[in-house]
Image 1: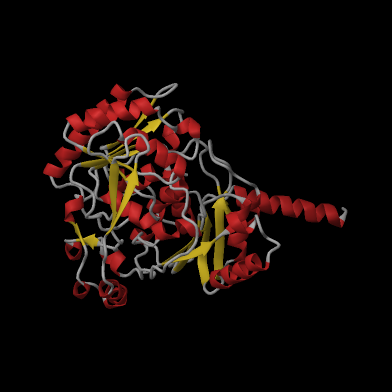
Image 2 (image 1 turned 60 degrees about the vertical axis):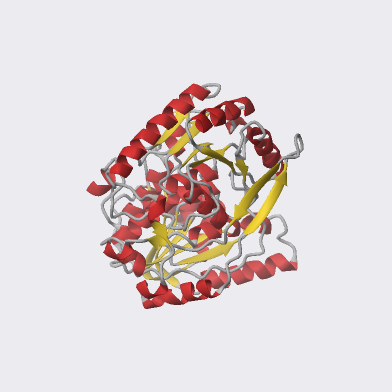
Length: 461
């Protein structure tokens, strides 16, 4: 037999073995784990539950995450993540020939290879994430894991399974959150779903994937209307937003309108001009946006990154879908988070009806104290924290906190719309020391947040 044919056959058999790998034997215990999920905002948020699972299973594990620089601030308020490795692949590939790009990539590679990992898990499934996975260093006996096949509605490039030591096959019809959780459980050898994860209500001892102090600048009973999306065909008509806002005001809610670009600001102004007392938020970074959303009593929005952040914050949520993709990216974990889908678009009455049901369910859970009310969140005194976390809070509390007021003037009636920005502080629940599950968070080293001069991300990606 020709030696070339033998090599080709062996290569094909090796790849087939990777694709069919289902029962995976992890390194025990997986002390150092690297997650590769670079973008986009919504996809990053959908992966948070998976790292929370890992933290719950392996309390002493060190979990690092490679992500696009613009989304890094969000991961720095996830209690399960030890350190964030920032990449800028989107920008680098547009200017790969420049000296600045080469230097930044060299610095990124150096940081990526500072540690060796027992498990490197590529949850992106693209060539760029496969490259990052390949560049990262494995410990002796460690493995690279990745998806072995494409799932419906998700991008996938074959390079990802060629790089992986063990490719994990998964059912094609799977929710984005479940996909990440299943892959991680198979890669690291723990059972998913656990019994407590099958509950339809939030567990009282469970930490939310994002821990942030609510902004003091958001009025009580505020509902944020997330009207913008990176895709025009995901948006909802202007008239619908104004009618919904009017109905919510009659029910006693205040209205807030996030925005992230000049076009979205103009849309927010048009909606606000018809809603007395409504507020248009200025453009913020992800930490500030999360703090403002955390202070709201709920969110109604289209399929966008901000709506997914609201889901991760365990807020009452109604998400509006013009396509039947709600099964893949819509909220599913909590009974007061729902999707509304219709062609060409859901009606105001349908959305309002779902909001009322979500609010009633949320209120019932609040009465039974089976959820985490934003009012229970407070900035913790450094004395209640473990030694390895104290230093970060000491630095934060030394700084003088200054509230800034920014006015946005409407073009149509020149009415001043004030939005207040509060510097973000990391916070934990006031009764955190009483919670058994919080022990894992105490053992997690929170990376220091540094001022990042990079451009703001598209919040509605």
